[in-house]
Length: 604
Image (cartoon, rainbow, N blue to C red):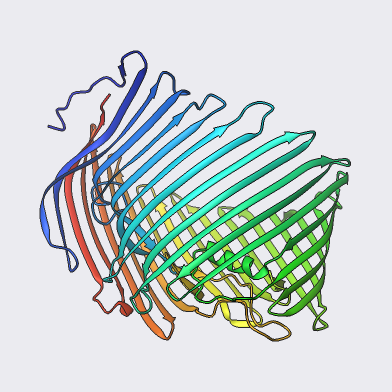
């Protein structure tokens, strides 16, 4: 029936004003599913996807797109869903060619995949239902302020394979922004409202449900304008109030921030500038960064006041097209946990670029001397970055590295050190092209060894005519915070203050470490025949609140596709295993296979 389907016109017009076209793919075949967390079944199945595009009157007046899909899994489609996923995506734009453009979109997904992450390793897998709605409008009238409004909301209900736990989340977001030009000034203002709520399982701990509610408002005002000597000036004010409620407590705060900058270019090769920043809630800024990154704060600092201001002056000079010199002086004053801290930092930097040994070489070397006024201590900080690339006969070589020591963080007296590297190598051997890459990084907080991050990654691959292969290996360890979507790397912004006292960083850390490896093969012996196979395995260990968990996942996937005319023969097999020892349940195992045909249609 699919093969005999007749072609129809590529576009249809309804009345005098509506134009539409639609294309898609329909599939039919035999499938089977079995595992320890699903009921085994097999039989005939059908699925497909389509995209409807259209407009009313003209596309600039109203245009729309609707894309439904049904029973789509990676065995019978290009979808990455382990099980069959269905849903719809719809969007429309209105008055796009006028001064009042608007847009609206909606999405609904059933049994789709999500992720639960551990930094530096492949994500663990969740599945569930989600929906989202977004509407926006703009006003752009000449000689009047321009205005943009946007509202978005969504929900997500999910479970994590390998546990008995379920989770859910929802969000609401309102964004308004206005811009205006007057007498050479660029003025802007904005308002943002965010509200999120989540119930998520403590997969790596006690398996209990954690409740989390975050909401906040942000107001901003800004102005900028050009100055003589090819200069510019800008000033901004921002107020944010936020509240984070969780099962064991609450954190709330208001942060006011003022910043300004001025820059001049008296000569083409010479730049002068100055910056100023002030915040009346330094700890609130730190905690707000953690919450924005998805981390959960399990403690608060009631009654604690803090503030910070810093001023800096900078200059740069281009000696030649290869040499650039930079100089910066910065003074900072901060107060938190009842103590005051101050520092002066003088930095000198050199940037160099040139052709070297037939390749391209660039480097940055920066030296900073910081004096802590409170403790009367001095430290030297270093930053070095080196990049090199060239082609050596048939070899392509790229390498880079960086090293930093005693680098200043958000808080006075808190420094980080670390290094990183990456390299790529490749060449052709006749019809075969081979490549390899390696990389790694490490960072740690000097005053708190418990805060740090370490990662390594290696990969290689080759392709020759119709055959290709790739393989990877990754390894990581460090400390983080448990969040709604997994483990979140903590900002390296704290430790023990120089004069003693309480640490501003969260103490409910998760220690994690693990490694992963995998590979893939692609075969295309004939123009219409494609065969792919992939394998991935990941292991990680976590410790949180004296609870340890050994976690693992395995993913096997194979697919073959052959095209004849507008039809495709498709066969696929997948195996998925995922488990967490802290959950107390057996690892989830899901297996599926599919054999069937697909046909592409231009419906109208």
